[in-house]
Length: 101
Figure (cartoon, one colour):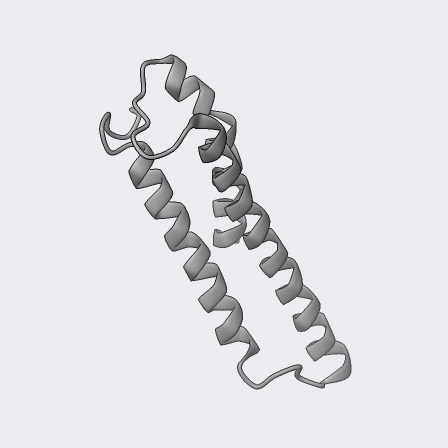
């Protein structure tokens, strides 16, 4: 559930980039359109990984054949990498003006 919520928050952040800029927010590293695309890309990637993990889980439970001995670790590593990218992107967005209240 946690990573699913992070997907939702990344999509919300993408939707509110224009509001941030119109309210006087300062973007130092990227343009608003690039920031929105990056948030959406991270959300899409995490959604695909979560979907793939659900498929692997069902295959494992139904057939008993594990696709790989370490598939859970790989899924977690991919999701943590995507979350790290999200966190860095959000930090860059709010670096000058601080996080919204």
